Image 1 (tube, rainbow, N blue to C red):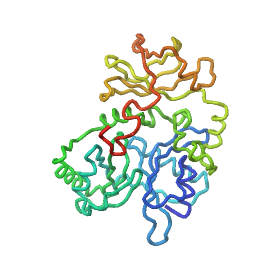
Image 2: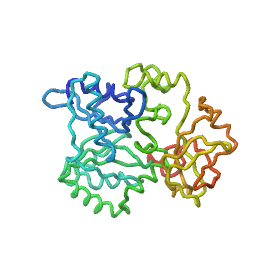
Image 3: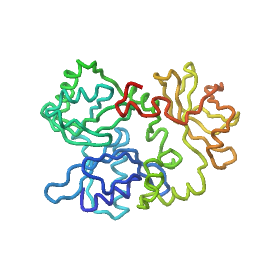
Image 4: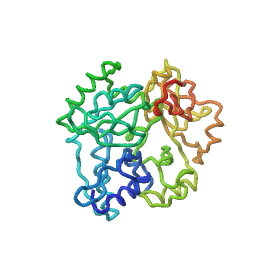
Length: 339
């Protein structure tokens, strides 16, 4: 919040935050001056301050990186000379995630006013659930049609119980963090601190689609953001490594740190691994470099005769996956479960 809230969030974020209407939610990265990824989170434009009319933003960060992200936003605002206030509401709210083909039916069943549930993707609004004001955000980190429900801590149990009671008719089940990890891996979603860190370039890690001026749709957007100059230089020079996804036979367990080989030559190692139950293959993510330090081009990646992953001294054939290994067209996110 504050007089410079819009300008600050637009400069700190790689994606466009300025000129967003109330109700928009934006997935974005936040970079350091070298173009390294410091944060991976969402920024929601929420209701304006009722007294001053100033624009307010709600930032949702991963549980493991929240303290880091909070500190980064505060320090970046100071560096940029912005007049804002950043309040940590972590202890005030809890998050419940409803994902799957029946997510909307469940939310309709528990909402005090069902007409409020009509939300487009990357939109947010306040609704009432079990008598509590809840911010519903139409997002997914699992590749399914669903909603994040940000509920006040004192009402979290009530909201959860209402969801489980009304959701029983739709076959609702509890899922844990391991399920989230696996499903996000199948969709190729990034995990900050694992496959992406502050020393990894946003371009190397594949964040161009959420960077102002780096896509066809935003080509004319020259708005500055922290790290943009460094990233433009990297783009012009060509990237010397790129984050890639690989899959191997389901009998081969991956845990991370395994070597990546291109035509028998070591070109990187896995940062993160999971087992893809939907595709029955082990999945790994790692940065691929050129052995002579040159540019890692599309031709270099496509031109490999053989990719391998070395596990405990044994090399196994691997497949490079340029797209999400599950639902690459995002039909499920759109609510289309007939494909």
